[in-house]
Length: 300
Ligand SMILES: Cc1cc2nc3c(=O)[nH]c(=O)nc-3n(C[C@H](O)[C@H](O)[C@H](O)COP(=O)(O)OP(=O)(O)OC[C@H]3O[C@@H](n4cnc5c(N)ncnc54)[C@H](O)[C@@H]3O)c2cc1C
Image 1 (cartoon, rainbow, N blue to C red):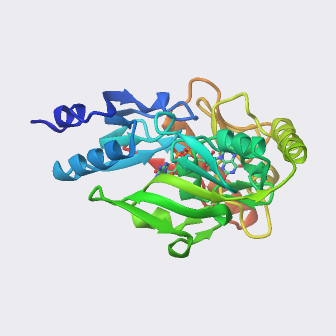
Image 2 (cartoon, rainbow, N blue to C red; image 1 turned 120 degrees about the vertical axis):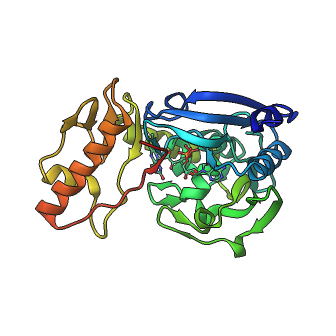
C-alpha cells in the first residue's frame, strides 16, 4: 500500500496531497507539500511519524507557519501540521497544560482568566505553543523557555517521551528541542498567581504597542533576523537605507525595517532575494552579518 493510503487509514488524521504551503504560512508563499497530514490526536502524530519512517519519507513539522519561509518548489515527503486540531489546553493548579497546537494567544488568555501571571508577553505573539517552545519565542522581556516545566515529545521512530525541565535548555530563539529532532506534542507551563485585571491590562498595553510599531496588516513572518549583539536588526537595516526596499512583491516594511512583508503577489524567491540583498548591504555598510530568525525550508 502507498504511504498516502496508509496515512489515510489512521483514525485521527486528515491527509491532503499536493497542498500549497502558501495556505499554511503567514507569509502566504510556498510551493506544494507532497503530503500534508493534520493529526487530531497524539497517537495520530505517533502513527504518522512511524509511517513516514517505514516509507523512508522526509518529515517536516509545522505549527501555524508564522516563522517559516517555504521555497516555491515546496516540500517533498510528509509535512505534519500540528495546529488547531490538536489544541486542547487547561489550567491545572498554577500550571497550563496545552497540546502543542494550542495558540500562544489562546493560552495567554486562558492564563489571564485564571489569574495566572508571566505569560502576558505571549498574548500577541502569533503561532502555536509547540512552535514557540521550539523557537523559545519571546517578546517584551519574556521568553517561553523560562516557563516550561515539562514537554511531551515524539521521537523520529514515533515513540512518546516526557521531558522534564532538567532535560531541556533554552537560549535566545533557540532550544535543545531544535537539535533533538523530536516533535513537541504537549507543553506544561509553570506560572504564578497574579491579579487578573493587571494581567489583562498589561496584555492590552503590549498589543497596542505592537499595533503601533509592527506592520500587522500585511503577511509576514515577524522579525526576519535575529537581534545582533547590542543592537537591533531593524535599526541597522534602516541605517543602511533599506526601509521600503522592494524586490518583486517583497518589501522591507516601511513601518518596521526588521520585517519583510508580502505586498500580495510575492513569491518565496522574491523574499529570499530581498533577504540576501539586505544581508549583503548591511554587512557592507555596517560590518554586521545579520543571522536569520525565520526558518527557511523546502526546494527551489
Ligand atoms: C506578525 C508576527 C509577529 C511575531 N512576533 C514574534 C515575537 O514577538 N517573538 C517571537 O519569538 N516570535 C515572533 N513571531 C514569530 C512566530 O510567531 C513564533 O516564532 C512562533 O512561536 C512560531 O510558532 P508556529 O506555530 O507558527 O511555528 P512554525 O512557524 O510553524 O514553525 C517554526 C519552527 O518550529 C518548528 N515547529 C513548529 N511546531 C512544532 C512542534 N509541535 N514540534 C516541533 N517543532 C515544531 C518548525 O519545524 C519550525 O522549525 C512573529 C511572527 C509574526 C508573523
